[in-house]
Image (cartoon, rainbow, N blue to C red; front, side):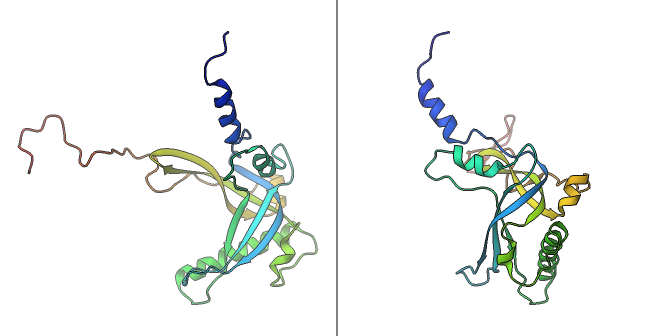
Length: 197
């Protein structure tokens, strides 16, 4: 076989996009690598705890670190992260949901780390193990459907090990999977009446 034109450049671009691929949906035991309490500058946006993590056990161990290291793009970002929003304590329905979600994270951390109890110091989450269920998400970027895997909800490490962690359903965002057109309007082929302009 003869080498075709542009192969070296194509090889570089393929490597730059990250040769590790994407994490398959499922439940994984993860280790928290970094914890940061964030207060957004825009008013009305909730505070949140931003955590960076990586898979700690199994076939996908160190997945996000390896993905980051093999990506040679200048704008690369570490993708093993999530935000845990802090309730505003305003009593509305959304705030009650935020409280329950926050409690799920603290419960999963307590259940996964013997002797650990949540004491309102999020910095102690660093180096702790936790189970995280990841699900596939579809979105549309620049007119192209993209599927990626994202952290959905926490579980205990034991639930991951014994197979009772559950599965996350596929989530579609925005216009994912919808037919779109660049035309101003779509006109049927067999239109008998005159157009209104």
